[in-house]
Image (cartoon, rainbow, N blue to C red; front, side):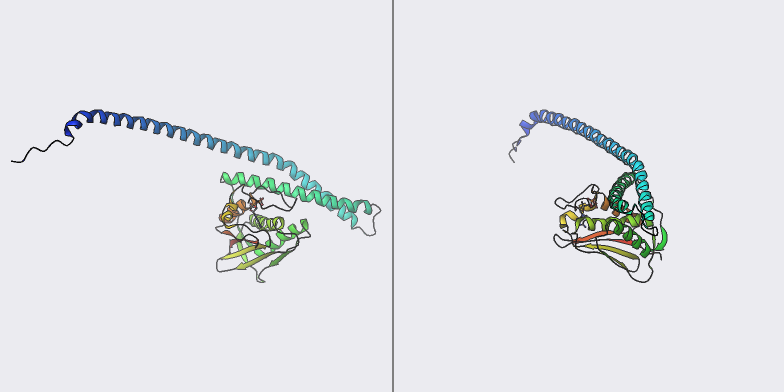
Length: 292
Ligand code: ADP
């Protein structure tokens, strides 16, 4: 006959288990209560953050909108004065007030450049806030890419006559299906960044190429270049690469230009990118849908 097996811990368990179980149950419900409270706190923090973000967006929109309205009047007024003074100077025979007016035109050029920068900055901020509300629409139209590029560069060069921008485009007309204003804004931002960050004496090249479905615009500069780990952040809003400074007064910088470029290009189902390395310059590119 087999001897009775000792109850390994059965004897002890029989008495200790209910209280152990009760302790574990109590611990469990305490943990559950703590978890519920943490979830509630997390939910409240998320709601607070969302409402702070909404307040920020509303303020951003209101401030940019309020500031932009007078800025538009200042810009229109300054452009009008500039045109009238130039017309006056171009009259046959030198008008007697010419020596007084000519230096005023130089001053006016500085005013116009600053006004343009502030105007651009405010409209960028308005666009950022519209994008956050998904309220930006594009209006694509079939059009030739070359005149769009040329007029954008001509306007920029009028503001920065000392900067050389070499434009290389295929001779045959490239038909694209794009919102001209938004694409002009993207090219403007790429080139203005090159003007702002690359040394004054080095040229900037804008090259347009075409493949089967897309046209590609690439803006190359010989500036400081961007480290690999920073490259994906430059497309985020309000991000600026630490240590990369723009030439004094070349542009106003908030770190939203590339964010808008990416958004506008993605609204066209295109792509953006950058090829860059510290000390080796940068090439910012985007693709645009061809009108097929
Ligand atoms: P910002 O108004 O600051 O120029 P962007 O969104 O256009 O804003 O650019 C984001 C950041 O990317 C810039 O602050 C700068 O640090 C970097 N960056 C943009 N373009 C260039 C460039 N061509 N060369 C070097 N760094 C650049």
